[in-house]
Each structure stands twice: as structure tokens, then as C-alpha cells.
Image 1: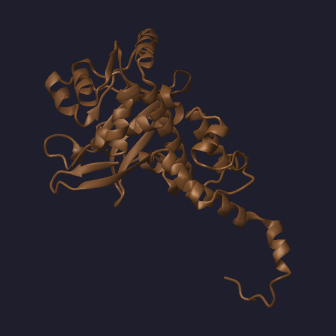
Image 2: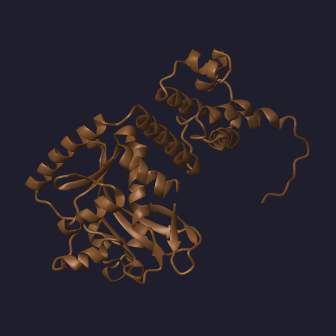
Image 3: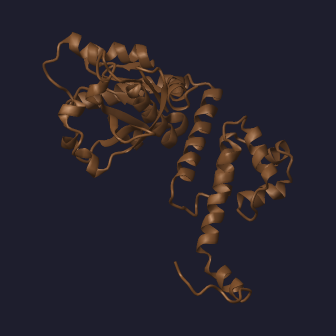
Length: 174
Length: 157
């Protein structure tokens, strides 16, 4: 399905730079290919250093965060606290240890993780510094803003409570 | 992600997104070396475009294997004017392979893997150019090899 038949080796080599052509395997060949790949990956995975694992997991968090803040959809599971907890897990730090490293009280860290409190600018900057710029402060900031935007845009109770303070509202609508 | 405009030497930012149904009618064999419409739902097809203007410059078909923490490249083609010695832009295939690595990394973290079953005659090219490892039928990227591709083509380091 993915292969054009009848190309000479020379033609294929000329195309390799700009086109990736693959072979269609039979079910038996495919099963064999999976076994071979699993065996080869076992070796490369075993050879991965702790630093490489950390970089891979940090990039995973960075790309997930990036994808979420660039997406218009809001997901109430993907909060600041959720991503902060993920960060702690991937660097294998206990809460008290991490709180000490960014010089905040452990209670405040728990409040941030449980979304009981919004982070200050200094906490956001400290997170960037702690990750050695792997996760920029602007990512954390945009995440908090996304939550705030959703809260402001959808909160009916707040509108109801504030209505009594507004007099003589405009009577035109646009 | 960036590709290079060969006439000016300028680096141009690109974006890669999933194709829409409306894109498929333009992905003809004449323009993209393969009639992408025949693939339908499997694999998932992604397109590469310049950030500054419309028009598809490259297309990639991927199949996800979540049980194996792996993404398999089924096909990548550049647009007709970007194939051969007179091509307009350099780096389209590299960016698309980089994007496959980014997707795999995003889903599987340290277990991320990208593989493909290339034509026998050209497997050495992918091993030399992208540092792919040989696993018999398949070539693959994982571990530091995959991270290198992400750093080069996605993070432009």
C-alpha cells in the first residue's frame, strides 16, 4: 500500500531525502518485526541513563503543558496543581524536600497542589529556575490565566452576587 | 520548528497539524507522490505548512501503538516542488520525523519510540541521517537518539 513498485535503487536513493517510503509487511513478517523491535528496545532502554530519562520526562511534561495552553478547550482536571504534582513526581521529590528547595512552606505547596491557592509570581519564577528553564515561567503563568479566564467567563454565582452593586447599566446590547 | 528556504537561506517557521477532511482532496498523487485519499482513517495523516502562509508542503501518515509505547511512520512525502535537486525548502522530512518523535514523547515519556519499515535499498540513509537503530525489519529511534532528533528539529537547538 505504501510502496511504489518498479523504482530503481538510484531513483529510491534520490528520493530518500524528501520522501519516506516504507514496505508493507505480511502478517507473519509484521509479527516477527514486532518481536525484533521489542528485543532491540529492551537493550536501548536498559542503556538509558538517569539523566536521559529525566530529560525525556521533562520534555513530556513541557509538551503536554504547551499543547494544553495552546488549545482553546478547557479541562478542569488539568490545573496548575495537577501539573505541579506531575513535576514533583518526575523529579522524584517529596513535598517537604521540594518546598525547601524553592523556599516555600510545605503547607503552601500542598495548597498549590490541591488548587486551594493560586501561585504568586515569585513561585512561578522559582519553578522556572528550579527546572533550569526546562518549563518556562510563562507556561505556568498561562496555565493559571487559563483557569482564571474559565472561572471569570463561566461563574454565574459571582455575577448574581455582584449584580446588586451595579446601578444604571447600559440598555443597548451588541 | 523550522525549514530552510534554499534560494534565500532564510529559516522559516512551520506548523504541523492533523489534516482535515477538506485537505484530502488536494493530497493527490500528482502533487504528493501518493494518493493520500486512499488511506482513509488509518493511519492518521499530518500536514506541514509554513506559519506565515497557507499551502501544504509535506504530509506524514502515522499509526499509534499505545500498547508498545510506539508510533510508526507509514509514509512521508514532500510536495512535488520540494522533491529533488531543485526543491524550494530543505528540512521538511526532518521536521515531520521530529514531530513524530515529539508526539511519541508526549504520550510515552522515557519509553517513547518511533519506528518505520523502510525500503531495503534506502535504510542506510535513515540510519546515517537520523541516527536510526537497526532492529531487523524495522528501524527505530528511542532514548538519546530520539531526544537528539527532538532537540534538533523541534526545539531547534
